[in-house]
Structures are given as C-alpha cells and as structure tokens.
Amino acid sequence: MSLVWAYGDHSGNKAWKGLTWAMSPFLASGFTACTFHVFYNPPEIGALVPLQALLTLSGNTACAYAAYRVWNEGKRIGDAAEAPAASEPKPFDEDGFIFKLALWSAGGAALVKYGELLAGDAPFNPSYPAALGLVALSSALITYGITSKTEGAPTLSMANVKSFGLAGTLSYVLVELGFWAIAFPLALSWYKVADGTWLDLSDPADKARLLGAGAVFINGVRLLVPLRLGAAIALAPTVEKALKSAGVDPNKEEDASEEASG
Image (cartoon, rainbow, N blue to C red; front, top):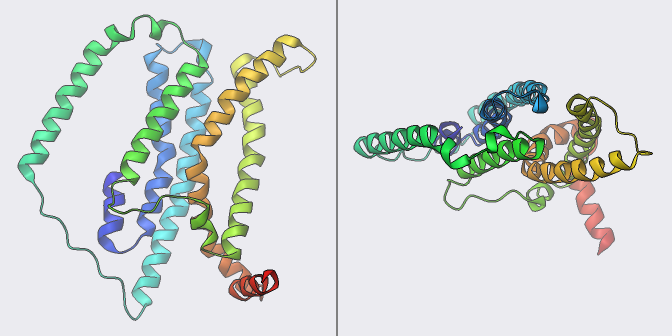
C-alpha cells in the first residue's frame, strides 16, 4: 500500500492512490484473521470468519475498479498534449533502510514473544467489541499513516466531493445509498451469525443488545467515512461522463443553480 501510494506521487498518475484505498479492505481482512487467532479461534467470535471473507471480496471488487481507473487515467494522460511531469525520485538511503528493517524486525519479534504477557487474560476472554476494536483501530491507523505521508496532502472532506459539482454530489448520493443498502442487512445478518438468533425487539434483553451492537455499528461506520468519501470522488468522473452522455452538462447546471441562488 505504501509503495503504491508513493508511486502515485512519483508517476503523475494520481489514480494509483485510489488503489491504495482499495487495498484497505485486504488490510482489515488480514487483521480480522490475526485477531481471531489472537483469541485462540474461539467459537464465541466465530462470525469473524465470514467477516474476513466479506472484506476479502470487498477488496477484490474495489481493487478491480481501482485498476480500471489507473488504466483509464494513464490512457488519458498518454493522449493528452502535455502529460504531468513525474517528480524526481528521492535518493535511496540503503543503510537507513537496512537499519529500519532490522529495528522493526527485532521490535516485532519482541512484541510477538512478550506481548502476550502484557495482555494478561485478555486473549482468553473473547468478545466482539474487543475483536472488532482491534481490527478497526489497527486498519485505520496503518491506512492513515500511509495516506498522510505526502507533504501538503489534502485531507478527504465533503469539499473535495463538492469540487466535482453536480457529478460529485450525485456520486456521493449513490455511494451513500449503496453503502446503507448493504450495511443494514449485512449488520443484521452478521448479528444472526454471531448470536444465533434474530433480534426480537419485543424482548427487553434484545433491546439492550441492540443498544450495544448499535454503538459498535455506528463507530464502525464512522471509521468508514474516508473510504465512502474516497469512493464518491473516484466515482465522480464516471458519473460526469454518464451525465454528458445523457445530454446533461454538469457545469452548466451548476452555473444555473448559482445564478438562481444569487
């Protein structure tokens, strides 16, 4: 992921950075498997297994679309009269790289060997909040660390989506509709797999479970906001092409709305 992000800066084809975001479900999938093993593969959190499969499928789908965007943007740059100049590669510090590799290897080995002693009885007390927290936090921190490397890199926000005008707004609406249409049934189905029964809102105990599961769900959804914004930005050029094919000029519609509001 880090190399792909750096190549996006160096090559001038920024679509490579979209491939880094598309690989983040793979990262979460790997952490899901590792988390399941950390708790010694208990049946109490057995729903992590289908969750890992879902994240892998999501990563495959996202990477396929991101690869298409890389090809399409490369073709556009190649056909353009003036292609953006690639940045000069930084000199490679071989000694520093070897030192960092040795340091990370030694630190990782020590953490694996002695970290279990610091964890106490936590690995023997499996729970979905703890497992999902490990997966989400680890994936989010690493993804943030990679995507914030570029100096002066812009942060993802609604302003980035709105910069595409009507196409950006429509792409965001489509992404949100698709996300929630998948998220709610998926969350309910995953609860069924995890608990063995469907939620019964007439049961006070199930209402309490719903409150706890809802808190985990909302926090998990909030962590996915950058991915949803990134998906909307990636989809915006396709939506713009579709609008133009349908005879709608997004720029003209935006100018008309600005004049009306003025």
